[in-house]
Amino acid sequence: MATAFKYDNLTHEQKAACLAEWLERLNGLVSSVETWAKEYGWATRRIEKTMKDSVLGEYKAPALRIQEDLAQILLEPIARFTPGSEGVVDLYLMPAYDDVASIYFSDGSWNLHYMFAGTKSVATLKVANPQKFTKEALHQVVGEMVTNAAQN
Amino acid sequence: MQRKTDEWISRIKEVEREYKIARIALDRLIVDADHDSSITQDLRSRDIRKAVERLEGTYIIRLFAEFETGLRSYWLSTKKKKQKQTATHAKLLVDRIGGKHVKENDLISSVHVVRKYRNALIHEREIDAVPVPIPTARAHLCKFFAQLPHDWA
Image 1 (cartoon, chains in turn brown, purple):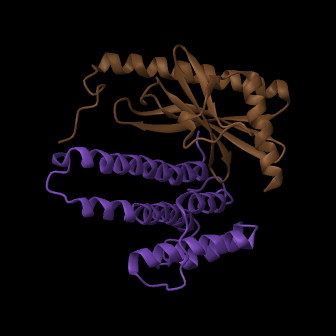
Image 2 (cartoon, one colour):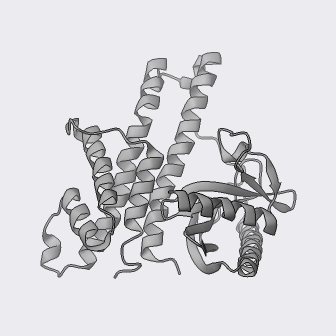
């Protein structure tokens, strides 16, 4: 028998509040990344992704495409409910959709899970050593992606 | 607003994410069943191991189905009403759409490698089929799809 998900019993109002908070969080992240990208001179395009969530239903969420040199990067919201955090957004190398990094919201801030070049490799991005997601961290990740894109 | 190509490649990626979840769940089930055989109810250990062995193949079939449905949606949008009734095989879809929109011939060939592997899994034929890991298949299919026109009716 399927076990009930702990958020299944939220009231309509609780779900609406949860969705509003999640969208506000996502908009804040996308706006920050957009600003940082502009400061670095990278081209960006904000897009809307249709999300289908078993608790929150169907809704539109912001995503961001970044172009720097040969690298096309997508910042894409994945889920509000995820074990051990209050939301996850992924970074992908496009158009292949290769996994690059995950950004989890926990303890009131966005934290980057990424295997930086030269660091010890781990089985999944989730167990990669987390660090605060900052302008400098984004710059480093994008820099490594540009290098990889040039080599492929 | 999300463009049609973005929507379809996102759907292809979604299948890979589901595969990862199923993989974690099955791996966990094998470990837990060793400690508590009651959790598998009437299933036997070898049934679970068979499910594990076949999981990647199952998701290759789903991955390609998502890709093919997207291609067919685009292809139908380019056809007149009468032509829409004609069935078109996946091979022809890839060749025709790829020939028109995809710049790299290597990429078209790579998509055919995935298609042949899918056929081998479904029909147990295509003896020259080469197994393709899920991340590689997803990358080929997404790269191909990304070169289609962004939107269609």
